[in-house]
Image 1 (cartoon, rainbow, N blue to C red):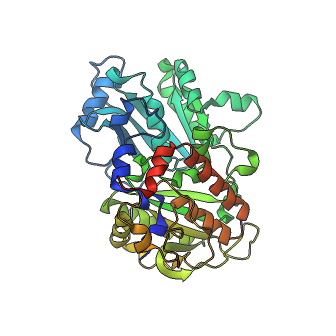
Image 2 (cartoon, rainbow, N blue to C red):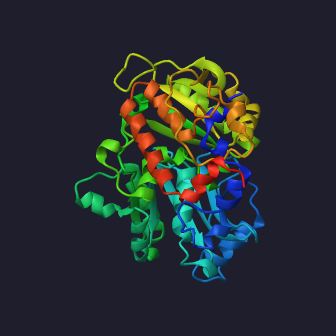
Image 3 (tube, rainbow, N blue to C red):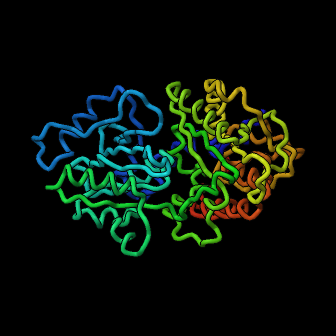
Length: 417
């Protein structure tokens, strides 16, 4: 039983979570207001409070009763409403809608961004945007907004489309057509088109890259010590600043995020697996008891199908439950990294209060050094696929991330209090 291989959060024990789980990645630990809020993806049928929130806060005139359109009942994973809510009062503080473009699913349309009038100027809009974009697995993003909001969107990484055009860069024709249509219908608002690209523009060559799919339990996003986000160049750059060109992961590894929030997501996950197979990709599940992972397709080989590796990202109990509930996973070939000479784990943001290291470790020492976090699993996979450079970038990011934690937190990993 070595399910601990599958996720960084598998090792996050209750005492550690109680102390640190509430601290958001994008807010200061000293900001008590932000410590009491959580991200939530809403599903149909929507809570009436969501409609009341938009009626009260969306328009300049609170008396105006109409609300923005919300995704329809059919939830295919390409259209979503996200909210930030107060943990204690169950109050909606901010909300937005993200929609994958039907013309190019690498682009996500941002709309209906709204913050409660009494909670504005607390950085909620920025936090909601960043966390929901990560949760939604959005790569490039665009929106239509009024000119007075240019400074706000620039802080989020958006650039007016006109600047790209003036510099001789192209904007997708379908996007310009959509903007012109929207501008014509709202001529009195003087809307502008803003675009946010990922750190590196992804081309069709990414279809030939090894792919890591993080099938993530919905609670992972709020865990401060989770490591899956280190694989995302945009998220890493937001946290640690500009990334050297040679350290971009998106040029070497295709990262995809699937969210598991319950049985309603089974059909979506099944459809995504079918899409991968239709694209002539070999799909594997990283799982205990599977075959040892051999050297797979490298980024320079074109005579073999590209490969996709699915990693279950959640606690040990959550990983088992996801596997048990998501029946499309059962038929996938399973791979294990055990016995493949993988570097020992350096992840220290976990405690050993229940003695799980000895119980679940498969090495001779029984010290748990073979129990990897999510980032380490991904690094091991991409290294086995022939890209040691990318694997080392991931491990370096993990080291940088862990260095930001106070020594006291890391010191609790081996002592029970």
